[in-house]
Length: 482
Ligand code: ADP
Image 1 (cartoon, rainbow, N blue to C red):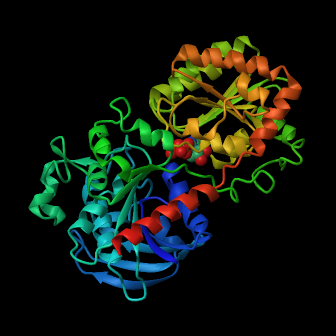
Image 2 (cartoon, rainbow, N blue to C red):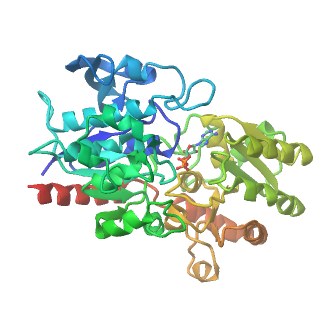
Image 3 (cartoon, rainbow, N blue to C red):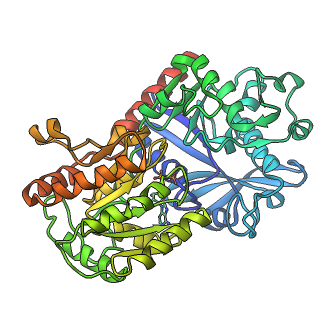
């Protein structure tokens, strides 16, 4: 049976991206198509999205959507079937989807994303030429979708709500409530009220028929007070309605044999050209071009979550072992400053670039020997998967999706010829330093390193297995709703 899914999200690669959410929303439709699931994705009409839409046709007009006229456009972009909510008063703003030019959140984000949820609920019931069996809402920006659907009356569609990061909760003042058009009973602890605010993420978790998150380990972690961020009680209450499905990587885009951004392309069958990428990376970041020097890399948001402070405290240990380090990212000012500082303090051995740079990110994955992912929590993480795909061994904190996607090269694994990276736990500076020493020892054993790199390059980081799990869940939900 073919199932028609309406996906609802605020980001979708390559059209609009601030993080891993976009990668997943962009890659899942093609992977699901191979499972007989047809996905149409509803996105806000940011300028970048409306500009990319090919042959967009108006399928529904709304004279007053939360304070202005809106048109629902249907068309294709980047190979995706899209519905775009063209509402200039809400989305026709330059730059970041959530932040004004001064870096502060738009004051009307509550309304901007309530509109997305309300329209999703309207569309789910069907439009001329477009019917759906199920709704798949992503993260807090689509969190009101299940709430609107719950009160949409008979014939409403079941909804899966996927949490990509529980830390982003979409909380707004209670004064927003009268504008939402939801019935009074929704403003309750058994509804969208959340510690004296309106919680969009909480609403999604409360009203969705089923919940998923992006790795099995994170699904277990968020039901605990340590990592539940205030929502662990609710999640425990939902019990078996919560599943963990590991993200995949878009392996057509992340393909070292075809990536046009790389100076040298390579594959598991022919890894030798990879050495040229390391040399180019060393040159670009102002480091001596030495194939025998262990090169650590980091790509990601420079935030507390990503453990960049832990990484910075491990730099002297790396340097004492004669290693090099390259850092690419943007984020908190203090961590950006710290990264610049270690570059200056260990000039010619540490290279830092602050900014978002896809081409350099690929070169770091394709040229580093080890990619550091010392996250304090990590719902899934894509950096370690990109590292595996490009033959850099991930050194990861033993949390969340990092546990589910990296096999630690400990003695037992090595005895079986397994292992494609390294774990450290607990997530402290001391244990990261100890892991750096362990990695350095293994680096000296060249045949062993070659084997671990081959294991990384042949690891299955594709969407196939996970798409099959989403498809099975969708089928179960549609059957249950019938
Ligand atoms: P997040 O929590 O930020 O979503 P993920 O690891 O799930 O973390 O996904 C981050 C994605 O964004 C990865 O594909 C990573 O390579 C990319 N990325 C992060 N920071 C940068 C940057 N500064 N430049 C280029 N790519 C980046």
